[in-house]
Image (cartoon, one colour):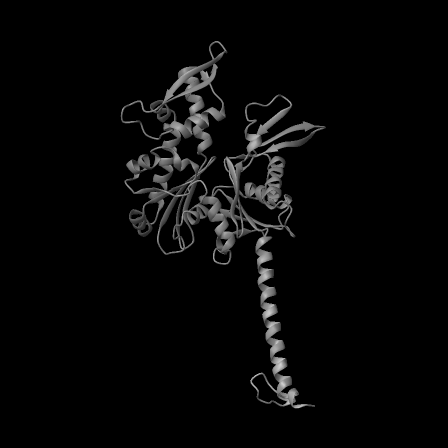
Length: 386
């Protein structure tokens, strides 16, 4: 053994035993660094291919939130199919199917499998959920996803079971349900875990959810089966009665989103819109004009139903929580919150401050996704069937 065998980098000397120990320590450090790097790579891969998702299975639109990625799908809850040999064969789902509404031949049907927030056609809803799951993940996942779905507060046990079974049959390994008002409040950024009263009004396509929340749970909630679809029906019915004009769902929705208002315009007329439909007197196509005053008259009944639901919730709220609501006001979420002057109509009836959420269309999906992200914190709000 030469002196060079004992010489260190700084010119000093060390014994063979010391040199052996230093080599061992260096090997351990290298192994630790390698393990940390591998762990980071594993976490990155796990996040990239995370399959857990939250679904806002709405009457009008379905939104899908993937854990760690946010909302990555927003499509109409519409399915087009034809029946062959007694079986329904799906032709289109989502945007493509919505284009077919009211325009299909006798051999094809385009339907909404969701009605008033719950499943109306079990088989078609299952196919729709499968389609959206495949579209979201594009076959890049390694396991079945865990899925959380929001449901109306007023859904019956049978309706909840139907939603859960459809999600499980569509490929989920575990299906959880969260009440829609809680999801909407979380998505709107309301501090529902605080010991204070928070009131949320979620106006969806099929239902309106009115709820008072405190300490992360529902104190009082009421679900009324009035929403965007009922408003469309009210417009169709009004034009049939007043103008002898028959229009389709798509035209009614365009009227609602373009010039829809919950209050009579100050000038008694408001903005006008040209629409087309079928004249019921002679059966030929016809074009006519409708203004905001007429739309407000058509929507008076569903708007009043929503106002009455809010008033009923305020009457049933405990006094201390009611005092908090006076300070905080009421939060509107859902697509129906975009109806013109709806916040003013509610303010006139309740005397409270009414706010519209920043992302009112996506609040429920965002809130359901946050419940998935922070499942341990919000586990009491999620119902997993044991």
